[in-house]
Length: 109
Image 1 (tube, rainbow, N blue to C red):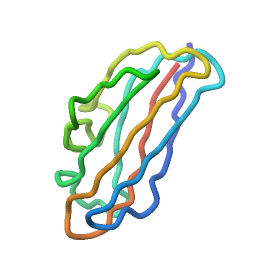
Image 2: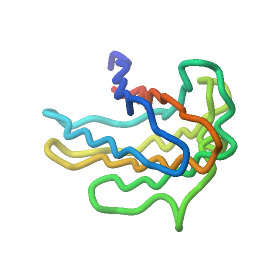
Image 3: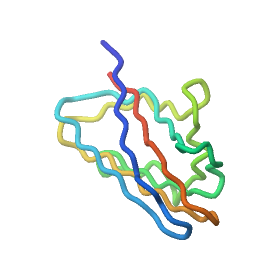
Image 4: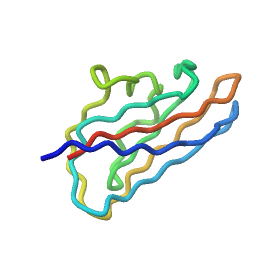
């Protein structure tokens, strides 16, 4: 299959605030990788991520965003099938002292 990228931007997340992103694929897919990108290059060490896919939690209770990864070589690679219409949900909590703007990027087939 062809690998495709899907990016969802959180917009600016103020210090002490959070953003949620939701994606519902319109076909059956297989998530090959997930990467987080902070648009200004700021550290993701003080951002916590909560992830559920098809109502199954993949974080207990959260992971630092830096753990998910910021490049395709070193990132979360679940190789996870997701059926059409299943909800992919991520909540990103900014515990830092300045705003962040994060792209949540999925590589799927």
